[in-house]
Image (cartoon, rainbow, N blue to C red; front, side, top):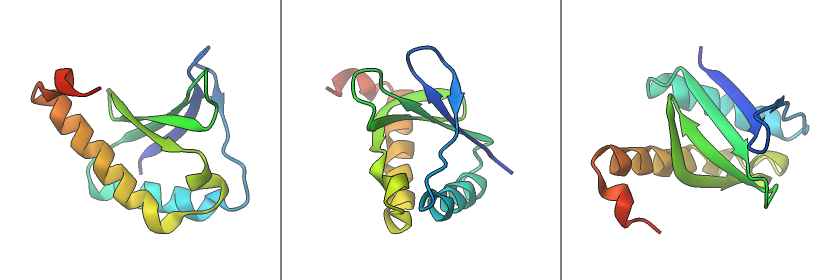
Length: 102
């Protein structure tokens, strides 16, 4: 079972995504992480825009973020697609193409 966490970028403290609509999304994140071999997925809250959650897959913090309304509005139908995009960003970074990303 993958560890899913939410942290504040400013100080690294962990917080809980307790919004009632988030449960289904979190289940989908858990399923996606397990299916794709990630033991840890962390969403880092941007200090300048609290609605941006920067994605970390395994040990890799990525240049990819998900809006917090994915969780607060229960957008479970799109979270897997967004995580697939994040995985693509991870692969671009590993291949050295991240230097071209703005």
